[in-house]
Image (cartoon, rainbow, N blue to C red; front, side, top):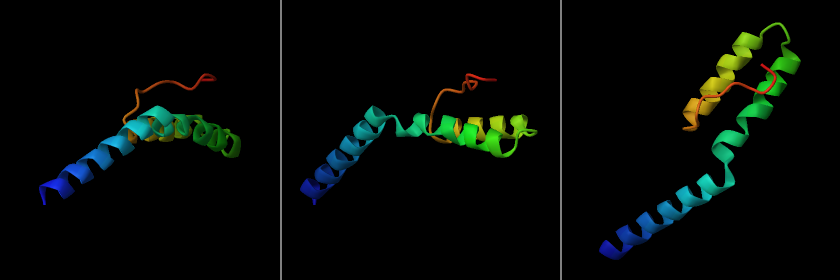
Length: 68
């Protein structure tokens, strides 16, 4: 039982390290913002709110998009 628990913990730790190394949590927020502003040019504030929601839900630092 202990060996299984240690194995599961090690696997979870390796997935966490891999996710941090790939940057998936933060890199995908900016293209989503650009897609939103392209589809809704009059709703930049709403797109910005979605961008910040994406960042916070992935544990990223809150930033402004480069074009804001």
